[in-house]
Amino acid sequence: MFRFFKVEDLQTRKKLLIAQSDIHRHTLVMHIADVREATARYKKMFTLAGVSTAAVGIGVRVAKSFFSRNESAPKRSGLFSKLLTGFTYFREAKSLIDHFRNHNGNGHDSP
Image (tube, rainbow, N blue to C red):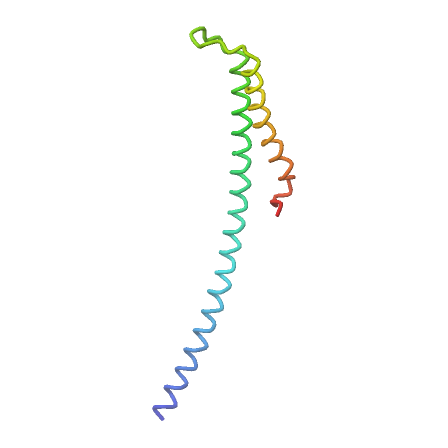
């Protein structure tokens, strides 16, 4: 008789553990979905911050070259210097344009 009650208690405990396991499994799936959504949101936000930082950096350099009036700095008026500065600006602008072209606004990266 004692053994019968023990088996019945074990079966009840097993059913309880199975139910708890199922609840924890569904909770874990929900948490993983939340983490994936938050990761995608932060990735998009930081991508936008990186692009805007690059755009501001280019704008500051161009504005500095137009409005700089530092007389103590050596004057760089040579053709090579102007070509090098133009090439640098072009390379930075091209990387910014390529970034916009690769991320076409649908939230997914190109493979």
